[in-house]
Length: 310
Image: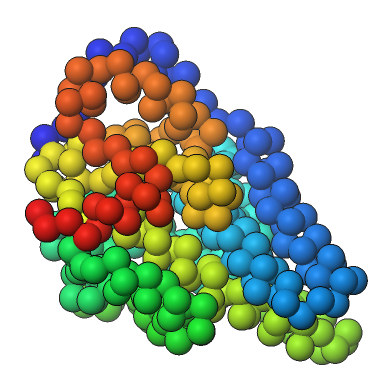
């Protein structure tokens, strides 16, 4: 693919790559505070019709945590790579039953071979009807509804866990850098805590169900938005999409500036908190203005694009 040539001042561009671990850590803690606070508030109020709201909020914050893990995958969290991965695993990846090491192996090949037969994400989704566009809005929305019924989320969970269990089954590549002591220790502590305090029901209601419903639903929406539907796939500017979300969409679907996906593919080393500024600078370049695929909103612009015939 053709690459983007920009006229951004080199010093200005370099500044966008600077990491600020405290911002990342604060965002991580904030998401957990929202999750725990939502659980506490629902249990205090005990209003049954608020449970779906709790599921949506918890699932959205799970999704937000994985966005932070994505930055850590590119080592945009801590300079110490071991601590970068250990903290991300304990705080994010082990709770959702995988690891940053497995994700990284898959994700780096996605960046190196974007939207080609060497891109594991692209290949895995090509034959799935959910990622085949254009399609009627009703079919897309029905698919989203199937997540809220647990059906599609369970299928996605099995699909994802199978993919990341053996990221390259043909080459039989093993992820050797994962800290097995840390991993097994995490699950021992988790199970012991659930058993000691009899929290299995709460764990099911406030973690497993949000994970299998809202979490995977938001993951699906974002995955579609990033690389599917009315994209030309001619060069680096037409192979992924940036979406300008509403405030509610930013909270639910596009936390931590993840909607600036085109910018991320152009400059993967830029941390999430610098992506809006990078977008502003790119908007001043002629090539970006002319060819960049920018969509306004998920449930407005994106939904319209997914139904268009290319």
